[in-house]
Length: 185
Image (cartoon, rainbow, N blue to C red; front, top):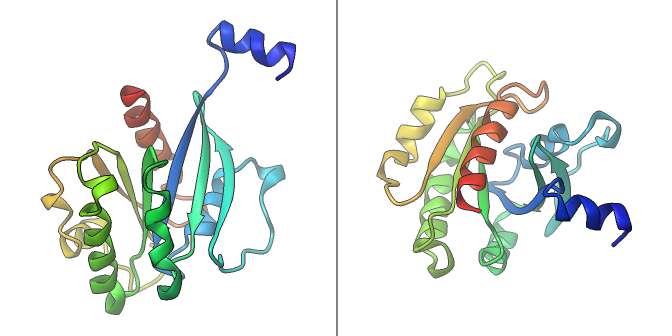
């Protein structure tokens, strides 16, 4: 650690680091969202499906986020639970135009919420109802109803309509997440 890092840490200027799990089914837009949250000069031009997981970083006004972008393919979802203990927040991305797999997303969410490493923690969960740019996309209210989000009583949660490609709805979500994480640090 350099002198400036130490000095900024002592003065309380250094941003606190937060570990965030980015979860959701494959092709929901997780990687695109995380990419769009990074500074423009650090964004990738070509987004490819995540195999296993990748670690990405971005900063907000007061926090430094380390995001574990987890693959949503069926054969990799069992890896998610190995990262639950380290997670301080969750971003759960839903493809709001994929009505057929909404039941699968709901089941994965239920499994996540009932896992022993998550169940008894007040970990904030940000939901992105993504792909709002598509003609047949469900509203965030409808996505919330289909996933029974109102049943989540023991964790702070918020749902944002988003279009990851254009970046719409992302800042609102990150602002909410930042407020919730800061209040729990």
